[in-house]
Length: 128
Image (cartoon, rainbow, N blue to C red):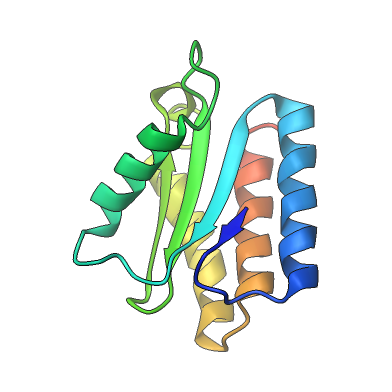
């Protein structure tokens, strides 16, 4: 969990970090949540792909990483997956998780919105 956009209270960041750690312990898949101050002109898709590759999210032999990237200044969010997660979390399921988050974001409730997305993705990928 990296809140570079500084949109979360400390307790929200801790709660989300602990949830992501439990998810990884239970499923062995790695889910990473990142907020950024801005995308510096890049598309959110390109930014997410570059970040996921640079940070090597997921197990190398399984390519089973999930990145939730949020750029609140640009009002953009992306769920990017490694190839090993595409069957468990296809694009339409990732979009459904985003759709769960956005009503919270409209009220500047980023912590609960991100939690809703993490829970939806976790349930879809084997962590009930």
